[in-house]
Image (cartoon, rainbow, N blue to C red):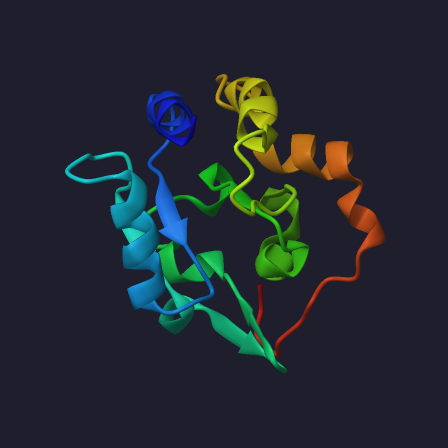
Amino acid sequence: YLIEFLQEVNKHWNVVLFTASYREYAERVLNKFEKNSQLIQNILTRENCTRHKELFIKDYRIIANKVSKDDIIMIDNKVISFGYNMHQGIPILPFYDDMGDTELRDILPFLLKLAKKGVVIKDVLKERYNYNRFPKINHGRKL
């Protein structure tokens, strides 16, 4: 189902594989399901993360000059991964080779809703996931 999910999502967004792991891991994952396809436009890895204590956080500011931060959505099984950009993350359950996993299929209608013109992604995610309850991670720089 991953290929179909990526094909549908690609109609509305540029898809980037962003992992807090090393590039070699990301490339192995990518090679498993996408041989010569254009479904993933870029790979960002641990080297592109910001370190906060012992954690690696995926910080959107590294691409802020190329894409409006307001148009970015992160889907991740670790909420801390989008801790600096809390209102732009969609939490999902982790995937462990369970062919019965439906997380991506279940989230697709919501992603399509977010793709509609006039939708303020940040506001919809903030309301849906009640992100105001979490403290914002501050790393000493203006966010």
